[in-house]
Amino acid sequence: MLQWIRDRFQGAIVWLLTFGIILVFVLGAGSYLFRQSNNSKTIAKVENQVITAEMINSSYNNYVRQNYSGNKSYDSFDLDPKKIKDKLANDLINKTAITKGLINYGFLVTSEDLLNYVKNDPFFQEKGVFSSAKYTNFLKQSQINEWQFQDLLKDMLLVEQCKNSILLSNFVHTNNAEDFIKKWYQVRNFGYVIVPAKRFNQSTISDQAIEDYYQQHKTSFVTPETVSIAYLDVSLEQLRSKVKVNNEALKNYYQEHQEYYTLPELVHIRHILITDPNKSDESRVKIEDILAKLKLGEDFQELAKKYSEDLDSAVNGGDLKWLGKGEIDDENFEQAAFNLAKEGDISEVVESKFGYHIIQLINKRAAKVGEFDKVIEQVTNHYKEEESQNKLDHLVEQLSRDDIIKEDLSKLANKFELQIQFAGPFTSHGAKDGIGSYSEVVAAAFDEQKFNHNSDLIRLSEDRMVVVKAIKKHAAYQKTLLEAHDEVKATLQQLAAKNLVKEYSLNLSKDLLSSTTPSKLVKSHELDWKLVTAKRDDANVDPKILKLAFSLSLLNKQQMFSLENGDHVIVQLSSIADADLEKMLSKQPDLIKNVQKQLGYGQAMVEHKLFEQELIKNVKIKKFITNSEQW
Image 1 (cartoon, one colour):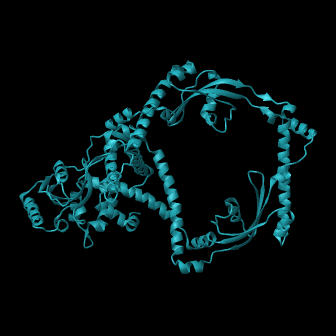
Image 2: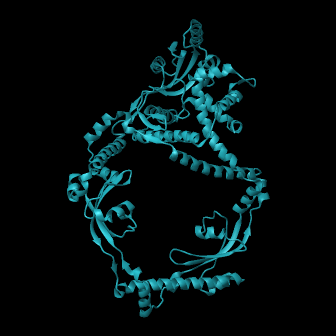
Image 3: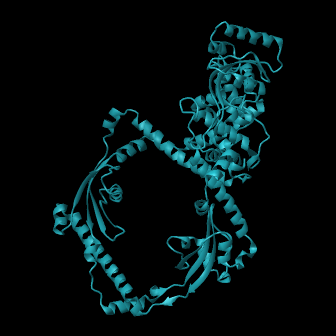
């Protein structure tokens, strides 16, 4: 399995190794310079794996760098930090759960597998042979030990192993692909006719027939027991609409939450590194010599490629991309980088815990706070969200008390500034829509023990709760023949029309099968016979009719179905022309191979997605903080 992964995904593996495998599962590119503190709030635990706020904040900074530097306008404030951070947190929790789930499920990457993988990876080879020096240098540059690297590589390979084991199990034979192409791109000729039900709606129903049907189906004309309710609706949406907003409150919120509306200061830098945590004189001389060359006018990027021992950045002339304050795990380096003022400025020799650096400024973006008037829409939304959430939390706490069941509903409404609403009557099957469509509400309304008392707080969704009180019950009632007369008559007319249109359509369909001129036959019935030549994706044909036409065969070439309005449709297939495979291959020689891949990949991806969802569901996840506002 690992050999297949290695052959198929070699490019991806090298990319991960050379451009930041340390943060593979922290949702963003990184380097050994990025800060990795453990002093951070715990957002969640996935089994024994801790997810911290700092991981998400680091990912968010990376998102800002990617989207608000370079070609994009740095003055744009269309980002919503809370939503982005919440999504990043959820993604990381799910990714971690998937990895844990794979281990629980039995996927395994052994130490021997990892060792063989590393030894056979060209990235760690010199002239086709594993180089311990290259491997050691990589770990040194990445500032992680061998065990940390193996853990990261193990997690990545577990995920790839799962994907590829599913891919390997989905094989599509050439004959199947050819047959699929012929059938998928075939052209079908068919005709259809619609028999309208309204032609048969005027059936005369006798009083005797009405009475007979009523007597035989008396139970169908019973008005079931119903309940009417009063309720308090506590929803985030409703509370949000009631939040009063004024300019002073918004300005105070804006001042207290400046971080939401601030784009951080960023620097785009390149550097040259001589790695030496012990700061030897030999390394100092080497970096001083490089600095002297720079001062004499030699090109920074060329010197970085030639001398820098940071292998990640050296290949790109020392480029470290955009960095923000707080991301660099060395105060000296960070201070020197942010002290550079003008494009092209070069620092003196900078000491860090990694060794000696020379830094050049490529570009700089000053921290920018969005002006209140420009971000007022975001401020208003955030303010309303926070106020309504606080109100909701308070209401949920108050309405969850045990003694709430006996309190007067109107007093509760006045106390919590809510409005009593009414619904019903509805049956024990509930209503089609509205509050009565929730099974929890229906169950509470028909709870005999709590009749005329408040229900417990019922959670309808994450952001909506209700307190329900049954205020009136209507007993089941048997309608008299007189009361049910019109209803019975309408029912009999509908049944008669349904039977008549079906019988009529069946006779017409038999005649169509034996007719050599279907259009003339249909016209004699004062109906329209529509002829169609279509491919499977023809947008000009009713999708239901098209789907039915492509489900028929020349042996079973006709089918009839009824529409919701009672009309009947007869579809009759006349001919099938498979796609000309040779003609298609002359234009697309790799068509069969591509279809094989697509069919196999499509099947595999559906299976993989379902498997991932199952893994997440079966892993123990505990969330300690659910909202980025609390970080």
